[in-house]
Length: 242
Image (cartoon, rainbow, N blue to C red; front, side, top):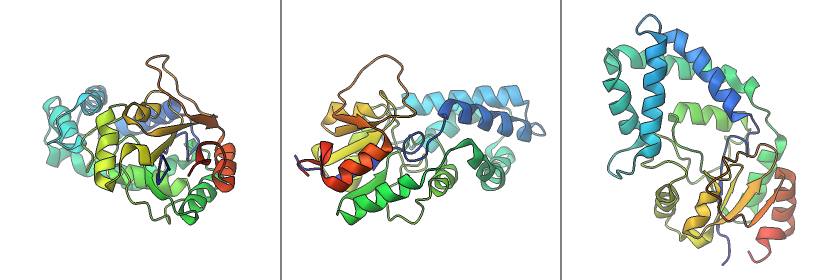
């Protein structure tokens, strides 16, 4: 089947970074900023519990944001009204300074612009466990905020997370396409390559590969972001029949 839609992961794919180090730094910076409201240790525990709840959730009637809030707020002794302004301010003023934790490449812009020029529909399929503000900042760091993506998966609007196949099905529903119309491009052998389980083609971007060992999914093609760009430009590799 021909590829019509290219879904791009963000962290480690279009935006090269060590995701684990980034998350560690993010928590280290965020926790002390809520110390005037709540014990930072309790805050971090609740933050991880809320994140885990989002990752496990399969209730299509609740957004990831709603699932996170429900769990997070049930574990801390303060109200949303008391803590949210501090979190919002953090994402607005402090988070943008984390750009040094990533290694932006001009290739990201070239790849996505080439895809658009070739007539492919494009979307950002990043794991929607972050608020829109945090994801938009990272799109900006990658140098692709000017691209007319049809969809960027954010926790305010998403109802599933990776690696659930429901996450990918939901994207197909939103874009009104079949899974076999789509190519998922990512660096995570479980979270991104799981798209193959519903019939999407997959491309594993090398450089910052994440592999937990199991389960393993079908990888239709692999290479560096530069290799992907060359295939896209020349209609070779995974694009041979597109």
